[in-house]
Amino acid sequence: MGGLLDNVTLVLFPKSNSKVSSTRVKIWQSNGASVRYQIPDIDDNKANNNTYLVLTNPESLNVAQLLKQLNMKSVSQIKVSVVTLAWLFTCLEQNKLVSRSDFLYQLPEVYTTPTSTDDLSVNPRKRRKVLSLSSLSSSQQQQQKNTVATDQCTRLVDKLTRVRDQKANHSSRRFARNDKIIEIFQEMISLLEQETLLESVNTHKARQYRNAITAIQDYNFPIRFSADLSDRPGIGKSICEHIDDIIETGSFPKFDALKKTLDQNTELRLVNQLSKIHGFGQINASVFIRKHGITDFCQMSEPKFYNRLNRVQKIGYRNRDDWSERMSRDEVTCHFRHIKNLVREFDPNLQIDIMGSYLRGEKDCGDIDYLIYEKGLVEQEEINKILFELVLFLKRKHYIECDLTEITPKMDKFMGGAIAPNYSKNRRVDIISVAYSNLGASFLYFAGNGYFNRCLRLLAGKKGLHLNEKGLYKDKGNTQLIESFSEKKILDILGVGWVEYKDRDI
Image 1 (cartoon, one colour):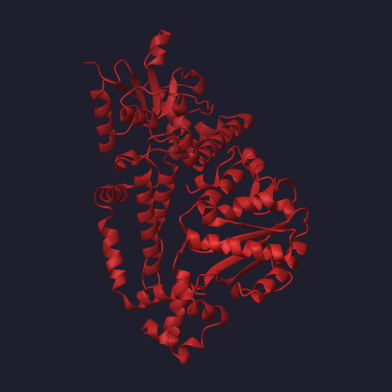
Image 2: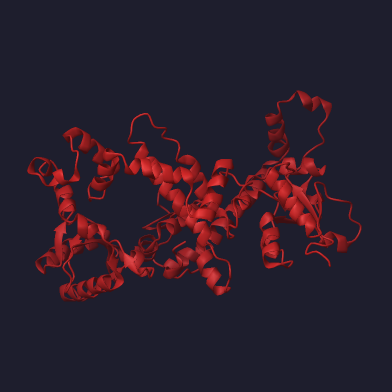
């Protein structure tokens, strides 16, 4: 019986003798593939179609080293399809030779010359630099940079549209395991940040987990085991071990041990309790506890400690239970209906929309974000004055129960607490005023989620643009506006296309 990869020749770059690489080669050979490290002489088109140059780590590709391994002088001499490792994974996963079109890699043009004995005196690092840059003309250097930037943009667009395109293509791929690994690593980072509050602790431990999260987010396929990621930047031996442990048990020993240690630390337990109060972060919570000698959270109710809190912290302390509890979607809907009626009573021309996790269709929410605007009103100062008057009106109507920000005619954001009809709990609400001309950019920003927004801003930067809640600009100085009113146009300009709000939780 023939193998899946019968008559297929795989030319691997870079050449590696690692255990993971050796295991992969054995798997491919057992499926009938011929594995090489140089492109064989090809005399006919049929053979050409069955030979693939496989890049096992395209993110850190050094074209000059590739040409040296292949004994070639320029990319134009490579007459076979160049694909990423993901193509082989997908073929094996689906047990068929899938189309290579989605996995092709465009190599930037780089020329090199054979290394002579005169080159041996050059430092190897400097020699590589000469081969990859100095031999290029300025236009070729720019072309290479443009190709790299284009590839980075493509990966960002893939991430931004992953949920949308999965649904459109009825993809069977599931990323739950990827998300679980990221979730555990994020928790590990949080624990390490807590640990830094103790004395004599390495403050750089969290970096490897942040790098691993970035690598996993860049990987657009379900993770089956750590070997899928082992050749990627940010994924070292210890991270691979953690990934395998998470896949097998849902956690990893180092995480469990640190969590147990921190849970038993009285000061850190107090810091965590206090930092959940609005107005406190972990650092100022730690300073407050040490400065005033607090040994138990119950002491915070005593006047000598409570009176040392500032105005915002006192409000946060009084509402700590309500604000730490997530709201059901029904409760948020009740809030939204009520404030819409109040806004209509206040000014029929004023519009209000709800943002954040509610707009993205989440079943519960931590707080509520509102946007107010008026059709045709493009002056930010004018809409700020309306926000000021609206907040006072909502206080008189007993919807807003407390305010965390100073209420002035110049504010463009109100932060406070509110209670909906038929509900007794005080909930965190923010109301943001938006100039009508900036509506699209504001919707993009405040709809979220946070990672979707960061990817959008990074994508804009790769294209030489600048994106914020006010608009998409040609420069970081925000002087040359491209688009701000249409959310769809901004997404189209960035090459993403429209993404439904429910598909933005990436």
